[in-house]
Image (cartoon, rainbow, N blue to C red):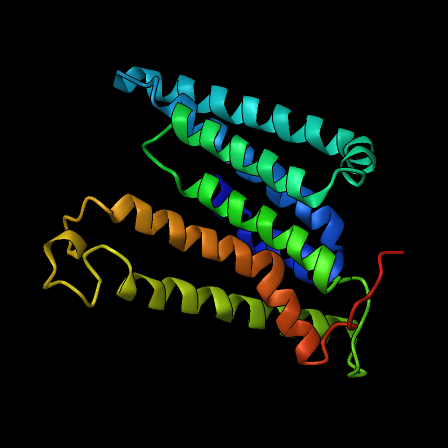
Amino acid sequence: MLQHFIPLLFLVYWGLDERRGFWLIFLLTLSSWINLCLSQFSFYPQDQILVMAASWVLGALFLGGGLLLIPRLKQKLSAIDARFFNMGAALLVLTMNGLYPLDRTPGAFLLGFALGYTTMKARFPFCAREGGKRALPKLLLVTIRCLTGSLGLALIFLAGPLFLPGEASLFQGFAIWGGSSPLYPMGQFILYGLAGLWTAAGAPRAFQQMGLAPQNQEEP
């Protein structure tokens, strides 16, 4: 489910409104995880359509309810210390992985995204609604940001597997690091965690360094 909305999510977070983009990514990732959890209850072929429909309905209800509560959530969470926010995110991810251990990638991305977002807010606030030093039209500015951010993600997913456990690793000579490595799930968790970290903090910092976003822009 989540992969269908990835271009739109990045467009919102990097190019339009980082605050709404944060909540959209957060809620859609959890909604996608709900779909994965419900899919494991499809034991017979005739159940697949019913389970799929139920998972989409529940995911949509969760997403819709979350979007309606965003103003209240934003006010309450803004008062929470970043350390407690990150601890809460880590606890949420542990719960997600415990309830559905077959696919840890949604939790990994969510944890990396949460850590990156709090780091960005504390050290180099990024405001997607404002332009940078370069006087570029809004459409061109957003396009360059999205291309830059997407290029970083492509590098992570192309280069990361070369150094992490798995079939694409450069260290196939080590049994514990090869294609059937028991550390493969850990490598996938790190990979998707880095993707979330880049999305929330790495790409915005790159935008600032390239003059595509203002430096230390305080949230209005």
